[in-house]
Length: 267
Length: 267
Image (cartoon, rainbow over the protein chains, first blue to last red):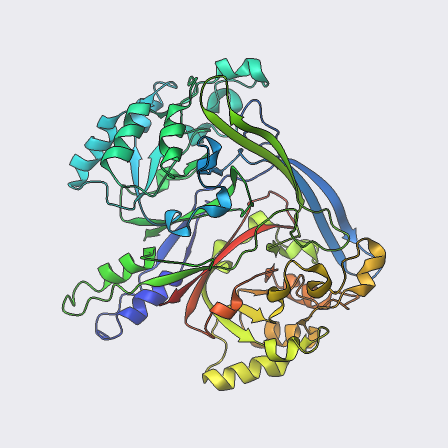
C-alpha cells in the first residue's frame, strides 16, 4: 500500500469552518493517495526518449564525522509520471512554469474504461465513455474538473512489453507501441462541450500507442489543458467527489516536467 | 505576482461539510501561494554542486504538421527549491521516495526572523525565536506542524553574491558562504521539545553558510524531519493558520529532490 491515512489540512479547515456547529463537528479523515510512479532505472519512457539516469556524488561517512549522501540525475521531461505542458504540442502556448496552479489543484472525476481497454490495447476512449459517466452520475462533468481516465494499464507498469506494447527502443520501435488513449473525437468533444481544467491517464500518452499525428495532444494542449501521463493507483479512486493536487517541477521554459500528483479521498 | 486566487479543493470541502447550515454557507476563497523558485540556468546551487542544464531535443513544426517541443535536463538533487530527505545527512534514514506524505502536507506556521537576519548574514536562528513566536501567538508550536523560517534572504535570489555570500564556485568557495540558518541548539530544542513534521526556509541550507559540521541537518534528519530549502514568497504568509503541500519528485533512492511547494492562505 502506497497510501497513508492522515488528518490532512482539510480536516483542520472542515473543523474550523464548522465551529459554529460544535454539536456536529466533522473532522473526517481523508485518505491521501499517491498517483505517482517512482523515478529509477525502471521508469518507463517513450521509446525514443532519454531514460532516467542517476549519478552518485557522495554516499558514506565524511572526514568531518557526519554521514552524507547526494546524487545528480538526468532525465527527459516526458517520462515516468509527468505533465505535458501546452507548449509540448502547441506553439506559443504555456510552458510548464506558466501553467496556473488553479489548473492543477481542485475537484476531480474519474472515468473508468478499464474493462474495454484491458481487452484491447489499441482502445480509443470515446465520447460515449464520457456521456455514460454523466448518465451514471446524473450530472455533467463539472466545470473546472480535473478528469482522470482509468484504462487499467498501470497494472502492467514497468513491464514495457505489456505497458508500451514493446520493449524495443529507438525510432523503429514507435510503430510497435500498443496502449489505449483518448480518441481525437472525444478530445474535441471535451474542449467544445465541457470546461475541464486538466486531464490525466494511466498510460504513457494521452494519444494511443498507434497514433501518428497526436491529435488528442494537439486538441487539448492548444486549449491550454495540460495532460498528466503514466499515473498509477487510479483504481483506488471513486468516480467523483475527490480532489487532486498535481505539482510539476517548475522548469522555466519546460515543455513538461516530472510530476508528483496526489488525490484526497473521503475515507 | 506569482500567486493566484482560486476556489480551491478546500472550498468544496468547506461547502459540503457545512451544508447542514445553508443560511451561513462559507465558500471562502483561499489564495494559493507558490513558494517555489523556477529551475533555469540562473537557479542557485551549492558552490560544489552540478547546476541545472537543459538540452533542447525538439522545438518547432514537424513533417507531420504538428508543433513539437521536448527537452532533457540534468541537475543535482540539491539545488533551487528542493527537499533534503533524511538520508542526506543521516545513515539508514528515509530516502526521498520513502517520506510519508503526511510529513509534507498539512498545517503550517511561519517564524519571521528577517529583521535580525537581514542585518547579519551569519545569523543563527535561536531557541528564543521560537519561544517568542509562541508567546506572541499564545500557543505552543502545534504538533504535526510544518515550520517555515523567514530570513528575508529570498529577496536576494538569484544574485549569488548576495544570496550565498559569493559568486565563486568550487571547494575553495565553501568558506566564503554567508547566509543565515538554524542554530544546532534550536534544532535540538525543536526535536526534543516540539513535535514538528517538517521544516523549511528561504536560504540555500538549513545550516548557516559558515557551518562546518552541518549539525542542524544531522539533528533534524536523524529524526526523519525533512528540510525544504531555497523557498520564496514566505513574506506573503501569515504566522499561522495556513496549510502547505510540498511535493518532491519521487526519486527512488534519492537523498533529496526538486520540490514544488505551495501554501493555502485564507483570503
